[in-house]
Amino acid sequence: MRVLPLALLSTAISIGLSACGGSSSDSGEPIEVPQVESLKALSTTYMGAAVPAGYEDQFSNGIETRPELQDVVIQHFDQITAENIMKSAYIQPRQGDFTFQDADNLVDWALDNNITVHAHALVWHSQMPSWMENYQGDWLTMMDTHVSTVADHFKGRVVSWDVVNEAFNDNNDNGYATYRDTDANSGGHGSPWYQNLGKDYIPEAFKMAHAADSGAELYYNDYNIEDDGAKLASVLRMADELLADDIPIDGIGFQMHVSYDWPSAQAIGTSFAKVVAKGLKVKVTELDIKMNPNGDRNTFTAAMAEEQKLRYQEIIKAYYDNVPANLRGGITVWGVSDADSWIPHFTGHNDWPLLFNSSLEQKPAIEGVANELK
Ligand code: XIL
Image 1 (cartoon, helix red, strand yellow):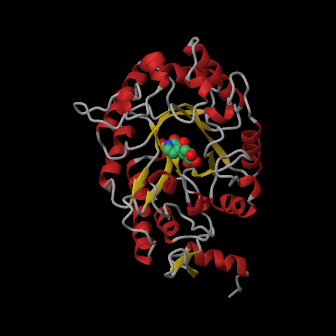
Image 2 (tube, rainbow, N blue to C red):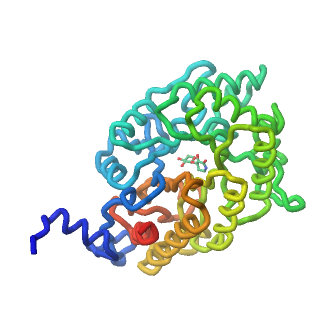
Image 3 (tube, helix red, strand yellow):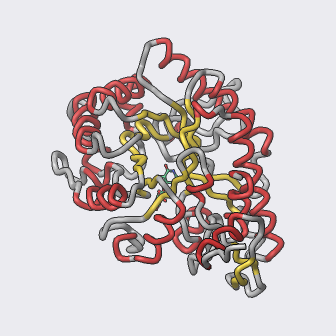
């Protein structure tokens, strides 16, 4: 028998089950550190990660200055999303002043490393520059300038766009969620786009994006639509309207900022299947799993790590079971290291939602993903 070179041997072990490479102590209690060789090598669809980037990024944790983060991304992912720097506040901070440098650097880095880019996001009510929010002129022209300029700039270098993000409220009005509207009607988070253009801003944005970059896949993206509830019903009704009018939409992005206990894997699978039934692609765009959504689980224990592993695994399974290969847009996690996750800022609680711990060591969660991909 020929002796395997050491590198190959460790690959063979790590692609096998549960190789344990030591233990981490984010929790004070030992947690297994798996040795998954490469998620992207196991996956038949895009395996993506959001990355913080740009020297002006609000957490000053841009990937440009972090070779260890770059290494993990290159090893495991074949797609990235810019966590912030392609949003309107960053890319057109003053009217007519498009600041592409940080995003260009990131896209160049990705392409140099054989990583594709999913671009995020053209039209969103949040992280808008104040000039845009308070714009007094013709909103359709202003939207066209933004969407066309940005989509054209990245044409041929990004594979897909979140064209419209988060157009719906979280309410249930006779089985449907209403469109995000004024702040008063939308829990303090209204949409200036809707206020100025009505719901037609959505098809218009898709048409503009397609005219600028006909090669990119175009997604509508939202959160809390994976529980098969009123908000998903509204997204599906909107999709019907767009499809009936031949609007160029390719798929629905499920952000999937979920929790260890919500929603059920069955509801998630049903939600995916309802989009598939429309012939649209399903892309998981911002997956993370809160382990402490209510602030009552303030230490990450070995038991929680195992719980999270099984939870990641059942979500990946729901995706593969319900979305046929030709409609898979990919799966992206919203960050790499727990230390960079937006979740603790959002919930106000400690949390460990991602696949790597704060030292960029693998968590059992990654093994849950890898097990299912195999
Ligand atoms: C979040 C980023 O992760 C944070 O860094 C930023 O402070 C706020 O935005 N839905 C989206 C993402 O579509 O753009 C958001 O990203 C998370 C929720």
